[in-house]
Image (cartoon, rainbow, N blue to C red; front, side):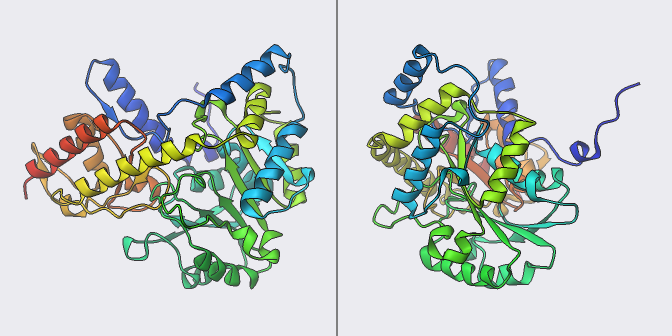
Length: 402
């Protein structure tokens, strides 16, 4: 008799981004010329100095267990980063290091949510947010946004969705999947609502902080704008995106000590410490030069400009220009109800699957991010791939019939 799985695991779907990426891999293994634009992974190599720091750590014998939530050197590097970049003052007891940004979020939510607690999540959202909340026994409260408000929530949106059960608000800026960035003024306005509700905490996911295209505008994170909000904010970041270290699996955060202590307890019974070698590499990443980012961002910007311009000329597609990250989140509303080779495009998932199977381009449908009819394209790939993928998308749009 097969084992009966937990209700929690049965109630969550597989990660849509991982699923589409794997489907693309499977088709590629069959010899098909797949262009994968579904994975949120920079196509640049990890900078040489960071790799050398990891090799040095291996040669020094830094290969044993570390403190559960990170070595002191890395915690100090995180403290310095938060102070220098974000005007946030933390001590080591307020810092947690985990095996990736996803683990930071998972640990925080699992450590604080009780059955029935509510977590406000603006949509579109990163695919794992609501499912992490559900695994912890909480209820995701989804606030839908639209291109009309640049996919951002307003203070009124927030106020209307706060109840006595609300425990957390998620803010992701720059956003995955839209690439939109909250301004200082927008965050201050949200902070005014937050301060009215003393039991509301904020999880600020800043993982794409350094990948922005308005270079003359400083990045703001909500905890730096108000002392009271700071005391109720967990500010999360990591090295996967800005340093092209997705496989190294290091995320970090700063926040209230009681939450950090609870997260440490959870890690002690689950993952234990992140990879010791990855931690030492991250010390170099945070303390070292970021000059390489200038070239990377310029390359991302060139790709963004090309793809936004191209998609806005495709029949049935419209696309906002993102301010950060390396995604676009175009609408395919003009294609819904059309037919392609005998298949009706009923929704954005149909569009994504037809695009994959017929045109060999992998994207992620907007329903996975909580908002249809859109789809997410990652432009963390070469311009050659982007041009070929855009041509194939354009062909599908032209060939779809009413």
